[in-house]
Amino acid sequence: MPEQVKGSRSRTESRLFATSVASVYPLYLAKVERKGRTKAELDEVITWLTGLDEPGLRRHLDSGTTFEELFEQVDLNPRASAITGTVCGVRVEDVEDPLMQKIRYLDKLVDELAKGRSMDRVLRA
Image 1 (tube, rainbow, N blue to C red):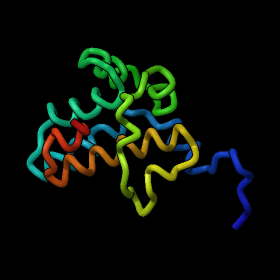
Image 2 (cartoon, rainbow, N blue to C red; image 1 turned 30 degrees about the vertical axis):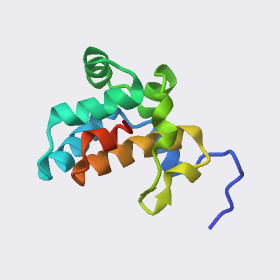
Image 3 (tube, helix red, strand yellow; image 1 turned 135 degrees about the horizontal axis):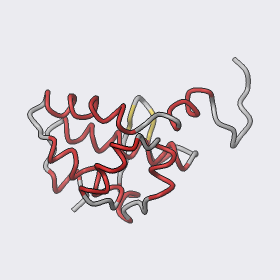
């Protein structure tokens, strides 16, 4: 396996960063709905993390905004650093690339929502 230069992005990361949020949103929604949670709860989690309001989230989804564009344009919730744990076997607090860490924060929140955690716990209240 070729050695990755520190600070450079892997092909997988680059592809993920260029993926539209709208293309992943239905997967997040299906995951939480399978576990009895709602679209409103998913949207609340996303708006909490990103600082967007509901119309702002819809605009990003409708316009095909990529993860990279989304996280460049929003101010992450100051409590986001309280999001800890693993996603896909990787501790989110240890992710070095700032953009990948923000994506992992979102993944972790969706996982917690799907696992049935209370909204207060998910939103670090």
